[in-house]
Length: 95
Length: 486
Image (cartoon, rainbow over all chains, first blue to last red; front, side):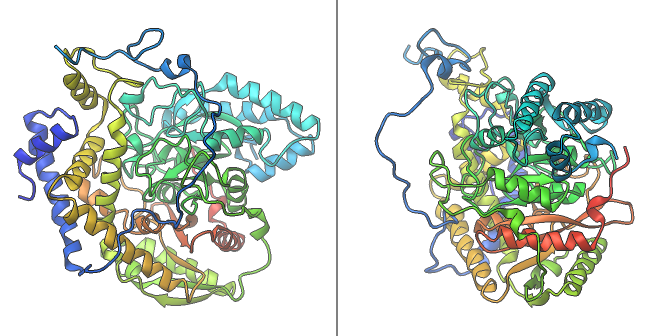
């Protein structure tokens, strides 16, 4: 098998996902099948081939460092699940 | 002819001649939605009151002689594109109650053109899927056969146009998500060149592949929508400062002298349905009769496109979707006592199965020890695929192929078999990897009466040639005029 159940649990932890045993089993099989298929790429010799991360040849898009219209505090907080007048609230981080 | 059956260009003519008001047109479209939505399920959110207010405002604009081609025209938007003050869910539980504080650039542009925005359309969650079955809220049904999928991920956008529930719509295309549902629902759909249309306000799935584009009842409407949404945007650093022509200006003349390549790898594809092949072959013959010279060409790395894509897109997705942490917006699981548990519970309950599968695949492919073997390798193969296109476009103006290997299949058919589903994207993904434009135009029907689309793909910024070719094809055929009976 291409990706073990242990690998799936490890990757789920990196991605901050909580999986039950059935999901670990299923994802391990399905992702394993996908990775087996992805291995067809190894039939190609890509020695010296450039990497493409972006299909259009653009360099950096610069702009003047000036303050523009932006979301105010109220709008920026409007969708927060827990907040007060000025802050996002999260569960306690330091015990 | 019913008012809701009008194309955008027909309605615009009636509106400007004052033989029709946007109020009447919008009312007719809303009544049509009322009559068929329980069978189609195209919409996640409907804004009937707001739409009527926009229609009245459009009528005033037109009466003052200040209308554009889209003033007063009822359109609908895929629910991945931010609309200020209107819920934008991405068909995900994690964004179920998200109300964007700003409009996407394309929405600003449609509003400035006076369009009436009637609602937000269903899709696969975060645009991950080819059937619209991955929506957290509902499954959209194909208007041509209600037991079948409309395609995806912009399935709501295609079904709504095909069922006359709007005059045109916007979708997004990361691997075929505009072209494939357009093909399955018998409408015209275009994925523009990467960077042609601003992605500002488009919820990110795979940032180097995503592009917004139109779905429409015919090619002229597609060109009108392209006119409205294209152009450089300083808010999107990947937007290209390329001049935007009047795309309707390409819908004239003839096709003599045009050279179309027929990629032999696409037509040799093992899963290709014989009826799809026949329809595409007939379309090629029609174009030959119109003066297009068709030549066989080769894109030798085609067989690697699906593998490269299903590394690159999940890698980008796993990074983009890291932002959904239950802190700043969206769903939060409030049962957890610690921050880490809050993240885990929020994401596990908020994301559906396909989204979790792609996050895991992407995270794995980017993780220590695997990055070079997967993401690195796929990025190199992406260069080879781009070079294939560069080479063929030295000898031809565009490429012709099927959009999807089969007509629309039954709802539920491939739900638990992700690899088979991914393989069905074989004809569309390459255009996203290469950043080139592609479109689907109706070119026939299967023996069961299901629509089949012809794909046209061209070099960067060749949308005009694609539209011109599709337009002349439409003039010679009547597939785009056929309507699903509901």
